[in-house]
Length: 231
Ligand code: FE
Image (cartoon, rainbow, N blue to C red; front, side, top):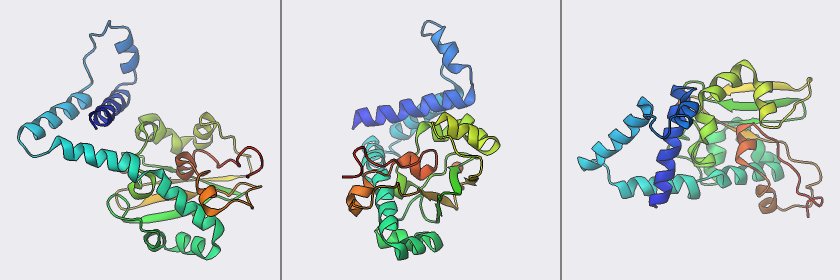
């Protein structure tokens, strides 16, 4: 548990440093270990110490919360939703028109996922999700947001140059594919329903769900067919 939490704080500090000061990493690397953490990183640590010290937060509760969202309520939930949408056209229709209701059918909903919108990738449309303001993300179906999702470069460049960002993720889209960028807010969060890869007709819903990645549901990747033709 402690390791999980330390990892989380470290990630938060790295993110805060990168976001607050682009030269942070270089400065730290060249400073023989004497670099002072950026202000946001210090605030994270100070706040945590203070809340624990005053008895307002139980460190074990924080650990449990983080563990739950990292491992139990992770992207596997979203993958199950996508697989169901692939095999059941009427479910897909409900998902695209009333995401909250469709997610609830599979038992998903709640904190940080109260108002969901599902958007479908097709041969002619590719959807990409970002939160330009901060890091709004659909926790019940995707778990905790990855560090890159919270980074300043991703948040700003996804809007200015989405194709360039996708290229950096290794996804080159044909010029005739329309790219739609969705800006999440605290009120509205998005789930991308990626395209079902060709050659997966023989796979079961469970097997299909294993192909669906977190990145594909944020829209920075496509889902690949398994090697060997989907058996
Ligand atoms: Fe946000």
